[in-house]
Length: 130
Image 1 (tube, helix red, strand yellow):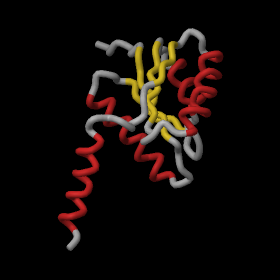
Image 2 (image 1 turned 90 degrees about the vertical axis):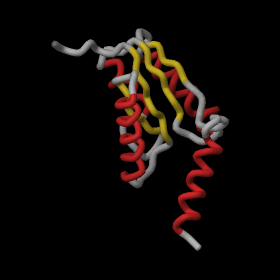
Image 3 (image 1 turned 120 degrees about the vertical axis):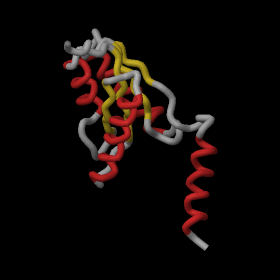
């Protein structure tokens, strides 16, 4: 029996880096998000320095038959890229794929789990240093 095609997906939108290992880390996170469910279509896209860029990521989502694409910024703060670049890129993507509903979520800033994540990283460091 074949699985039903997803109609909604996530595009994890990161800055990107010329260091491919950094970009691969975002792709691996996208795979973990997909494995955790409920969205089977979760991919990474990049502003700069990684592939696909946002336009390519939206194109791939449209080709996969998605009806709705949720763009989740993998940025710590709501800075210049999210204020200036992302709205411009989303407008162009929406114009290119009017049949695809594209919506944008919030960056990681302000998420209630962020303090505990930072404390966990500090505890990891404290356990390995004197």
